[in-house]
Length: 232
Ligand SMILES: Nc1ncnc2c1ncn2[C@@H]1O[C@H](COP(=O)(O)OP(=O)(O)OP(=O)(O)O)[C@@H](O)[C@H]1O
Figure 1 (cartoon, rainbow, N blue to C red):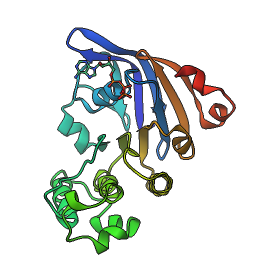
Figure 2 (cartoon, helix red, strand yellow):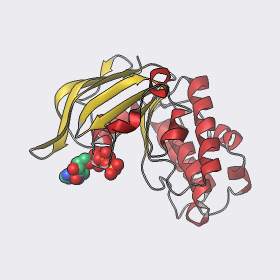
Figure 3 (spheres, rainbow, N blue to C red):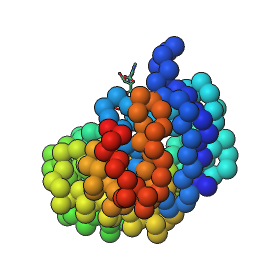
C-alpha cells in the first residue's frame, strides 16, 4: 500500500475534530474524501501532512511510519498537498514556478517528473511560460498548481477542492489528465471535491465523513449504486 491510515484522531488544541479514520490507498489509486461543510475533510489532510498532530493511531507511507515526522520530511518522502485556492507563486513566471519547485525537489534527492513533462501534460503552459502566474486565468493557474504538485517523485497527492473557480469542462479535462498520470506513474491521491459527479469519474474509492467520523467507505463501483447523498 502507498498510504495506510490506522484509526487516527486529530483536532485543534484540546478539541478533537476527527476520529476513528482508517483507510488504505494502493499505488495509482485515488480516494475521494467527501462530507458536508465542517465534516473534518481538511483537518484529515492537515493531519496526514503533519500540519497538526494526531493524538491516536498511525500513518504509514510506502510501509514506513510517518506520523512522527516533520512536514518537510513527509514531503521529502512523497506526500504532496495541492491546497485550496491557487497553490502557485503569483509573482513568478510559470517557468520560474516550475524551476523553483523542481530545484527544491532535486535538493531532496528526488528524480522523476520534470518541468518538460509538465509542459507535455499541459501544453498551454509552454506558450505562457514567461507570463507571471498571478496574471493567468484561473484554469491556467490550476494547471500550474497541478504541475507543481506532480514535480519530482510524489507518492501521494492530497488535493483540496481543485475545481474551485474552474469552468465545468476544464474540471473534467484536468481530472482526466490527473487520473492518467496517477495510473501511469503509480501515484496515489486523496481528492476533496464538492463537484461529486466529476470526482466520481476518476476515483477508485469513496470515504465520507460526518461530524469527523467515517460513515461510508466503499469502492466506486458500490458507490455508484448507493444513495450517497443521504450522508450529506
Ligand atoms: N484552525 C482551526 N482551529 C480550530 N478549529 C478549526 C480550525 N480549522 C477548522 N476547524 C474546525 O474543525 C471542524 C472541521 O473543519 P474542516 O475544515 O476540517 O472541515 P471540512 O470538511 O474540510 O469543511 P469544508 O468543506 O467547509 O472545508 C470545523 O468545526 C471547523 O470549525
